[in-house]
Amino acid sequence: MQNKKTKYIFVVGGVISGVGKGITSSSVGVILKNRGLSVTAIKIDPYINVDAGTMNPTEHGEVFVLKDGDECDQDMGNYERFLDIDLTRINYMTTGRVYQKVIERERNLEYKGKCVEVVPHIPLEVIHRIKEAGKKANADVVIIEIGGTVGEYQNMLFLEAARMLKIEKPKDVIFVMVSYLPTPSKVGEMKTKPTQNAVRTLNGSGIQPDFLIARGATNLDQKRKEKISMFCNITPDRIISAPDVDSIYDIPLNFEKEKLSDKLCEVMGAICKKPDPKSWNKWKNFVKHVHNGSRVVNIAMIGKYFETGDFILSDSYLSVIEAIKYSSYMQNTKAKISWLNASDFEKDPKKLKELKKYDGIVVPGGFGSRGIEGIVSSIKFARENKIPYFGLCYGMQLLVIEYARNVLGIKDAITREINPESKNLVIDVMESQKELLKNKIYGGSMRLGEYKAILRDKTIAQNAYGKKEILERHRHRYEVNPAYVKDLEANGLVFSGYSPDGHLMEIAELPKSKHPFFLGTQFHPEFLARPLTPHPLFTAFIKACLSSNK
Image (spheres, rainbow, N blue to C red):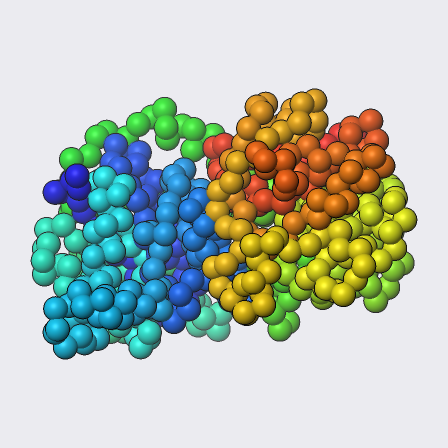
């Protein structure tokens, strides 16, 4: 039964995109959890896509997968990591998803013959989903991040939903605006006018922010707080300075320096406990490790979704990066990650020798043929030169292809994804997927979400997890072809994790007697890595990297 006193905090952005709404939402959740409140989080994305699964990662960033298989925005990963909770599809919505549901309801006569209109029916569906998420989590507080920037046409209906919910529950809804205050280099002064205009635009939607998170290169001084207060109708004590920090994990600590949880609890009228020192000290100790690693481990990330114009988009592999960091921090170590484009190894194979300067190599997930031969060459180099290697999803499939080619001598070993006409499809599509591909049904149709795997005794994987059965999240369409498993194992490759029926291979590795760490997972372990509970396979990988750089 839903708590009748559930509070709703809407987080909106002003001035620029990428201002930090997701991290702000996550950090607010952390400080409220520390005050004894049950918190859940929702991301609203204003695009027409039904989910994030069909979008190019170099444009939108990583696709995060929830335990129930929902493909969603990377901010959902931030929520899960910061709050240490598992979310489900009710916590994520897009314009496309909302319209799809309203049209479905209309087709099923659920509106009882009414004329179904954009307003109020679209905002009402949004409100329904927000309430359902709170009810499912039995949450004291639901934090709702509205994607995009105030003033954009795309998020108007979501702002309208927020306004309508405020009318319905005036004492239970508060608004937090995260806005950017630029400091032009030739001016040398932090400017408040863009934020004033952003607040005024939000007012035009019938919404007055209760709090303003002032993002900027430096701390917001009292004079500018007073200026924003005067023109934006927000008291100075509710204008929170949020300067750039070295680590996103500093942000909850910075918020508490300005007593944000006290102020939120006061405005919400929520019954908040005193801060839990035990819980808070765990976060503080984690942040200390973030800044104070005594060693450095050099990791090469070999991928294909880095370049976007003249820039590197590391967000394509955000969860992998954070998982590496968490396990490194646990070892009092800082990870230095270098982004290597797989295509470079195809153009110039001599560059493979540069991999010797790294302590470990990671190949994350991906799709398609671009750069694949470069990745296979790098895997061969890692195997032959005893460099710790960790392959994720496609990184495991390519590990198997490399082993089949160069150890079993199957020179044309390949995946159906690249060459369906090959005689040696070491990686093949699941039977359940063939009809979907034939009919070009791609969105939301892969093996998605949480699946069980059984671990083989006395393997690297089983030693890392310390248990026999695991649950991990998947996002893929292709699998190791069962017809080749026997020959691969006869030639030294160990499938240390497999599905309960023994048909699907989930983890491949070489024994430690042959290689310090040569392992790939069909699933995405990065989705379960959390700041205070690093993933065991990433930790085993980092330990192997540290041993190799002695």
